[in-house]
Length: 406
Image 1 (tube, helix red, strand yellow):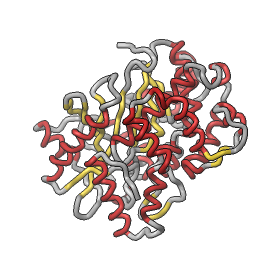
Image 2: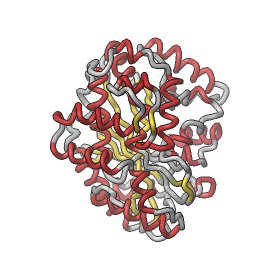
Image 3: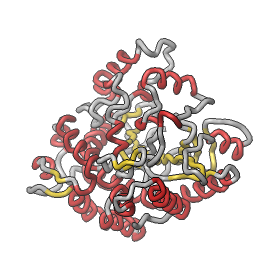
Image 4: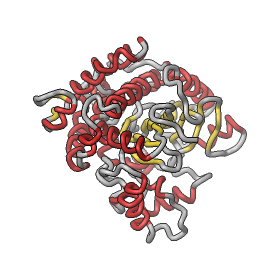
């Protein structure tokens, strides 16, 4: 079924399983599914939320079971499922851990791929790219799926998404630490995401999608080169171009939706949904032409947008935006921190939001990205014990659906 712009939404949240005693990732999602359903499967429908496996055996995905119109209470639905998952995992001394990266995981030593349904595809990916790196096995994100009805709606939505993508990590960065060290990037997940498919760079491109605004153009400029590049590796012809396209936002013409993928997972669904709603409402402003015209949105080349994105994944909300043409889109005429852009967008959509989400978004704008709050809590002490202490508090925040306050 096709839906019109912003008529329905799809939200996907990824979480890692950790051993509650030693804090290591625990690759037992298959056992979790056996406990829940009595058999190993790739998907479990649990009312309005569905559970799914991922590439690696220690990550579970919770997602809306089909398109939804109700974003207001989605954080509560996700929290119910998180509590149920944690209850089942308790028998194996395991729990869910939020944030976009495990801060102590050694991917080379600890990665185990999913061995069941779709394992043929995962094994092929592993042969081509070696999935035992941070960019593959130590990444958790939120995906937002947004529908379009036809080419006219795709053009508007894709133009808007491209323009907003570079500044999204300012809100969502939650991956400052790899293997016990400050990476120097607030969004280290997106830093490794840029190059984790370096063997076939056409798959990720510049993360920001190219200037394509129709199904035909998308096929010619993005899908066809990807299919050609993968052909020597995919001798059994089992990979699909929708699956292969790894840009920061991908067009899913198989279900008429654009999937936004540059969003790190947060400490709790309340935070995830606050970010999702701020992004969605800001996209509406762009789609409606409230900020600049569609034609002006379409003029932005991915190289220009990538430069902004590249600076934002390093410093998140305190990134100084120096591109005056980009600032002009949001009514600014001098260099500012990217957080100011989000405050302007919030001021334009605040009246449309419920009190709950006004408060939740305000918390994020006042307290900064989760990465900044994690680094503040660590106070420069990157010892294993101090990292565990902070991240176990984050696991509590997930269970209780509470913001993390250093």
